[in-house]
Image (cartoon, rainbow, N blue to C red; front, side):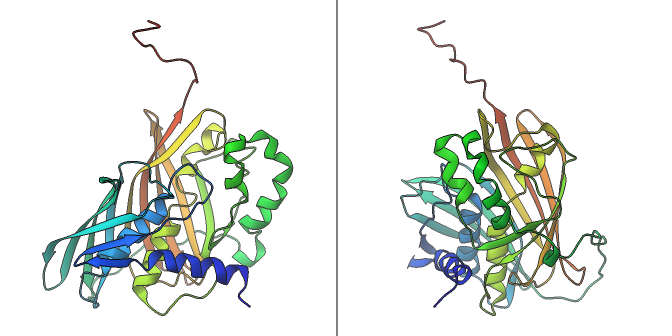
Length: 303
């Protein structure tokens, strides 16, 4: 009998295993993680899978840059249309449009590269406690149950929703009772069950998981969270650079910071290291962090 982790990871792999419809055209399904729309990491991960299926197997994704254009409808399928921009001897480029109800909800450019030898350097991995010494997000979430009365009823399901990724924060942040702190966080993460021995799958799962926790880093200095009344949050864009092969079913450290926020937008960055201290990926994202005043807007009727 499959464990909960195996069930969740199996479901995630099913999500990422897109249905081919036609040449460079694929269809994917969505999962409800308790938010108001499709989780951004799901769309980005599926778009990465769609692009990967149109390039030479010897080429692996080394970067992606995507824009979230519209909220995704969790009840509707998503169609992924892949444009072959360029095929070179070393690099290939693909453009992917994620479409629902006839309109794009996400647009991505991804670049693929054959493995080459070259110069190597990197920043040092932060010195943090091992993941085995830290509480999982699932364990912490159970302790937050007594604080659910602080959360709008429409969002309570999101607090209890389990996901396929095991996340362990070095300094946990209670999103139901957020404190003010520096815009820095370190989170160990990995899939809750083994993944296939396919580097393309590991990079797609990393793309999916990289959207967890990142935008929240820009809220730390302000003592607010996604669950704060009147708070409107959404990913605007997302970029990843893959530096070397990685294993998403082994612990990776996601070291995040937010250098600034302005005009209702927060910028967050992340470096991802394996346990050997090797930098495997870098991430950047700008997101909407709008505090709505909940007051009526001016209209011709009310002046």
